[in-house]
Structures are given as structure tokens and as C-alpha cells.
Length: 226
Ligand SMILES: Nc1nc2c(ncn2[C@@H]2O[C@H](COP(=O)(O)OP(=O)(O)OP(=O)(O)O)[C@@H](O)[C@H]2O)c(=O)[nH]1
Ligand SMILES: [Mg+2]
Image 1 (cartoon, rainbow, N blue to C red):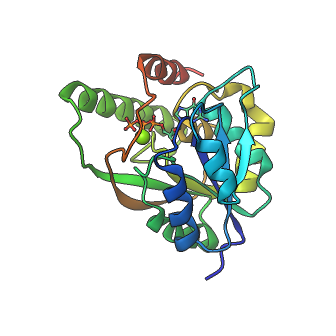
Image 2: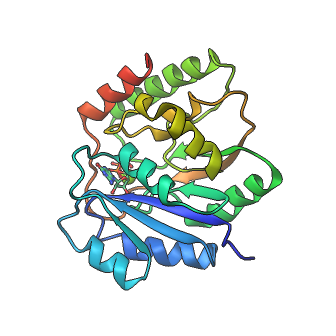
């Protein structure tokens, strides 16, 4: 199967421990797909590794507004294929599931959400509670628009590229550029999208450190009201 109809967008910040392996796995599972690594100025070897793998390195180090959502949005703007998939660079999302996401997009779904089946985690209790609360709030917010998604804050999803570009043209200002929940910001802009799901087990980060902070949680909370 050829995946030249798909661009895989990977936001990164200091992912030297994982990004090389991730690119290899994307290529193995979705041969022919374009890979855009959208990087916010990593200080480690992320850039060198991405370039050695001949993937596209989108260098955002000089951008004033940094952030995961801003990086994904810029990656989408560069994409030229019919479909796109967003995946974390730390191997917490399984690239093995990309073919299933793309298959559903080809079948006619507008958005396909990678839904965490269970958190395979040593997450602290407070993080579990926060995560659950965030998800329920987001679900309710989208229900107001008639959209039902289980994992509204998933960082692993696919979409028709044109649909995402259109949302950016109409409403990029409503996205929270420094936030982590780009899927949620995107879904809020859609009218009656056809949404599919694929299930996966959320892994533990394989190396490097998490960049999520209280600020990101606050930004997500704020985005409920945008
Ligand atoms: N471009 C860009 N990428 C980011 C930024 N923050 C995080 N990332 C990347 O986005 C992905 C998700 O970030 P993580 O820090 O793993 O967030 P998380 O998965 O919610 O948290 P953990 O479960 O602790 O790993 C990873 O590929 C990061 O390298 C950022 O500010 N800019
Ligand atoms: Mg992570």
C-alpha cells in the first residue's frame, strides 16, 4: 500500500531520543507518506536526526509564538496531500495505527481520532483526575455543537487536509497556539463532521522529558470558552 496521499505531522521539542525511531516506524508502516517535523527550536540533536532521515524539518526556532498547536498548524499549512495525520514524536502514539487512520479517511471520514483505550501508565492520581475532568469538559463543549468524540484531547488523529486548512483560514485566531489540544480547537470549528475512531493503548514516553505544564492545562481550560 502506498501512502503518498498522506502527510504525517510531528510536533517536536527536544526529541532526539525518539524522533529517529519514530520516523523509521512511520516509513515502515506508511511507506510513501510525507513526514513533516515541526520543531520549536530543539536544543538537542533533533534537527540533525530529522535531516539525516531526509524528512522535512520545519524550523520554527525564530517564530515569536511557539507551541504545540502553532507547530501543528504550520505543519498543516505545508502539507500538500489529501490526508494528514498528527502524531507525537515521543513514541507514545503507535505508528502502526496510521494505516487504520488513513483507511478510514479514504473511506470518507472527515476526521479520525486515535482514542486511548486505556492509559498504560504510572500516572499519578492527580494527573488521572485532571485528565478525566479535561476530557469530560471538552466532550460537553463539543456536544453543544452536536459533535460526540470520546477522546477530545487526543494528540493522535487524522483529517482531510483541506478541512483543517479551511478551519485555519476561517478561525486560526480561535486556536490556542501555545496549547496542547489542537484536535479540540479544530473540532470546535467543524459543522457536522463525519468522525471515525481507532483505538490504541497510550504508551509511556520512551525517553526525554515531558513538556506539559500547568500553563497548558490552563490554556485548555480557557479554550472551552473560545
Ligand atoms: N513544536 C513543539 N512541539 C512540542 C512542544 N511541546 C511539546 N512538543 C512535542 O509534542 C509532543 C507531545 O509532547 P509531550 O511533552 O510528550 O506531552 P504529553 O504526551 O502530553 O506528555 P507525556 O505523557 O508526559 O509525554 C512531543 O512530540 C513533544 O516533543 C512545543 O512547545 N512545540
Ligand atoms: Mg508525550
